[in-house]
Length: 198
Image 1 (cartoon, rainbow, N blue to C red):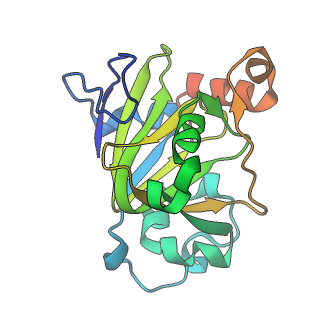
Image 2 (image 1 turned 90 degrees about the vertical axis):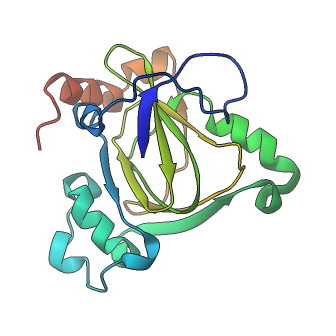
């Protein structure tokens, strides 16, 4: 994983948009983001119930999650998505553009990267874009209410497992006056202001 401020240049979102220096992983926790590394072929074969029981994902430590990721389907809804021209056909470019529009969700976004690579951009407390480069084995948990966007990189391929509490909710809430007034956004801002106590 590599983290840095996005250069804000208006060119293709799939380019790295790198700035220097890179940022430490510790920048993520104050934004409510959890990260861990879990290579798909190195996962321990044990039940997640022993680790997290029926707790919602927000109370699950990312390290525990990453060790038990294949077994999350026993407790949460999950699916696998492949984003590529081959898998999406003519809809690929439109879908990439949709993912890259700034938005938030009412629920946490939990992603385990199985193959390929891409970028999650998230807003920091100063409203700057922080770019998180993800690749195979990365586990990322974005809190409800954080503004973000996603794109593949120049390889145009990523496959990821997605986890949800209960029934999947794909609704993207695009940034605007209504989202700023929403309870989810207000709760996120409150937690961010207090440093996301666990």
